[in-house]
Image (cartoon, rainbow over the protein chains, first blue to last red):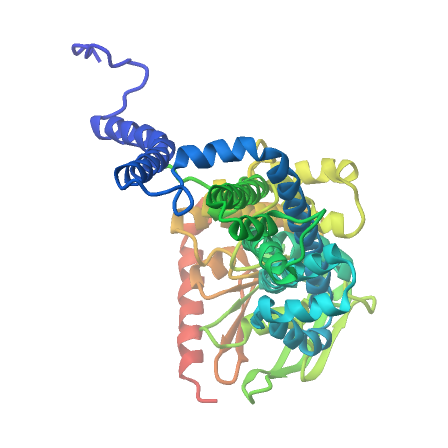
Length: 287
Length: 265
C-alpha cells in the first residue's frame, strides 16, 4: 500500500502489466480492423493507376481508377435509376424469400408430412442453376420486373427455408419437455420456444440470402437481356460493353459491389442487434 | 424422535389416500430395452422420496412417466382426485431459455397458463427471493454461475406452488459446496411450500440428507430392490450432516445400493 506509486499508473485501477499490454493490443486491433482494409484498398487503387499510366493502356481496354470515378459522377443520371431498379428487385426478392421461407419453414415444423412432400422441390429449385431456369421464366411471365423478381427470389429462398427449418427443429429437448409438462399450446411452443431458438439460424440464412438475391437479380437481367426503361445495373454493364465504354462498365460494377457490401453490413447489423444479448456468436468474452 | 415419526406416519398415511400411486408400472422401449419393470410406489402428501440407483436403473424413466412425458407400457399411474395435479420439474441441466432474462424464465410456467407479466410479477419476484436471487431478475442466464442457473430452475419449478415437485439429478453437475447449499435450500423450500418431492439421485449422501424415504433401484431391467425409511426429523441442518444418525443411514443406504447392484435380474 505505502509503496512508491508508479508515475502514470492510477492507483484506483491496479491492472498488471500483462493486462495493460492486452488492453493496448485490443485497442490496436479495433483500429486496425478499419485502417488495414482501407490501406489495402488505397494501395490497390494506386497500383492500378500506376499500371495504367506506366504502360499507357488505352481507356477502352483498362481505364484508370480516376476515370472510373469521373464516369461514376458524369453518368450518375444513367447509373442511379439502374441502381434503383436493381436495389428494388433485390429487396423485394429478399422480402419475399423471408416471408415465404419462414412461412414454409413454420408449416414444415407443424407437419412432418408436408416437410417430406415439399422439401425435395425446394432442393431441386436450389440446385438447378438459375441461369438455366430464367429463359423459361421469361417465356411464361410477361412482366420483365416480375420475371426478374421470381429469379432473384428462387436464389434467395433456399437458405432462408433450410436454415429456419433447422432452427425451428433445434429447440432444446429439456425445454420442449418443460413446455409439454406445463401444457403449452402449439402456438405458445412456436412463439416462445421454437422461433427464439430459430433466430440465430434464420439470421445466418438472411446474411447468405441477402447477397444471393443481389446475384439472382443481376444474373436474371443478363438472361432477360432486354433494355429500355426500367433496366438495372446488369443491363447497363451489357450495354456499355457493346459501346466499349469500359469505364462505365467498371462504374456499374463498383455500384453492384458496393450494394452487396451494404446488404451484408445491414444484415450483419440486424443479426448482431437481435442476438447481442444472449447468443454466443454475438458475445465478446472477457479473457 | 420416535413420537415425531409416529405423528408423521399417522397424519401422512392413515388420514388420506396417497397423492400418487404407481402399480406394476413398466416401460419397454421400441428397441426392446426394459427400462422399468413392475414399479410399485405409493407417494403420500409431504413425502420426500429419493429414487437412488446406478445409471440405467430406470429412475429417470420413472420420473418421465410420472410427468406424463411418456405413457407406461403396462401398469397404472393413479392420482388422488383422478387427474394430474400441478407439477414442478427440475432437470439435471438448468434448462433455461438463453434468450430470456431470469425474470422471463421464471415467469414461463405462469405465462403458459395465461398470466401477464404484471399479474405474475409478485409471484416471480417471490420465487426469486426464495432462492436468493433477488436483484438478478434482469440478468441473462449466461451471466450466471452453474449454481445460480440451477437456482433459477428451482425458482421456475416453485413459482406455480406445485403439489408435486419432480427433480431429476438436479445437482449432479455441481461442485460439492454448491450442492450442499442447494440441498439446504431445497429442504427449506419444501418445508415452506409443503409440497411432495420425488428426487432422482445417484448420491447416497444426498438421498439420506434430503428424504424421508429412499427407494433403492437396480439396473437391467430397472426395478425397485428395497425401500429404506429415514425418520430423522425435519428441519435438517448442518448438525444432521455430522450426526451419528446420518452416518448410520448412509451406511445402510450404501449397503442396500451395493446389494442392489449384485442382485441378478
